[in-house]
Image (tube, rainbow, N blue to C red; front, side, top):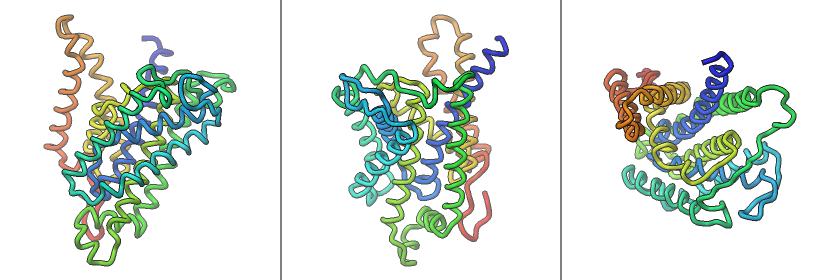
Length: 314
């Protein structure tokens, strides 16, 4: 492979891993710091992608939108709509126990995907939304992917720094107290439901922003892109591998697991033709084995969980 091809592949890899890092940071707010068992990551990811596409795309007769707004407004709108949907969903779901919350959130995510799949007026159905504009594409004189890599990394960096500041504040300590024992937190006078809602909404805003970045990277989205395995399952694996409750671990886990996932593509390409049809399943098995190895070697993930007040790091 020529140097140009290696650079192009590495850049595309880093952009995608950065988008997954945003998803992991959002999930880390909800699960790693608050203990909210959200299996509906794909739903908020999809909402962000479709919202930004609808807001920024040029007029189109086949679906809602064509507003032609700037990229930054699309990104902000994606986060706002995802957060608003999370706010509405908080009332019927956040009082559920962990197992039931997981069932409810994955059901909601699938419902969201099916809405985008069936409502042609909104999302063009299974045909998807095409020609999603990329920010400053015409003005960039060099390989555009390098510029977009900077956009993604700056977004990840800003979100990371903001979360680090927030989670080290008294607000973050309350979230971790709820994670450890919400009964004790309630006895200390904290409004557990309100803090859980704030966590769910904030995490969903970040997931929506990741969806917007994904839409503008690929320039085409359809409901198939938001299947649970690739927009929920793998995000959970990334967070667990990196270290749940640790923002650095969330980012590291995204890059490690995405590296393994893309690396297995080269391995499965070497399989006999008779096994090529099962390559996708074999790649999932490899990810599962990686997860088992990490859990046996480092139960808290590679970097471990952020310590609760008065506790040592794992």
